[in-house]
Image (cartoon, rainbow, N blue to C red; front, side):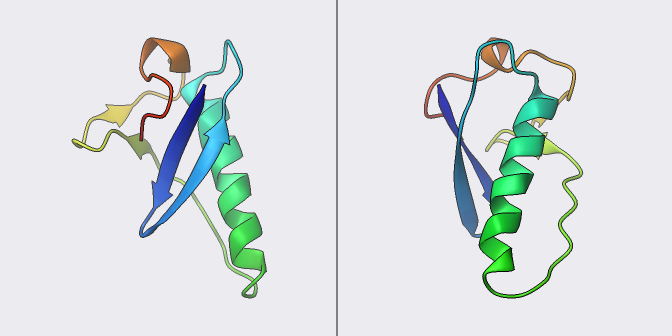
Length: 73
């Protein structure tokens, strides 16, 4: 399963493994976003929460596959 996580105008695609929690997604998406920013200089990135496009906030302890499907944003 792949999920797109958007940071402002920038989206990063994260391939997700079975059993991942939302917290795992946050960690991987933030790491990938930092890699993009490092190409332009040093930036601090802190992810406070992840939410659906419609605004619902995801709980970090929830199992990702219970909440999203392949290619969701």
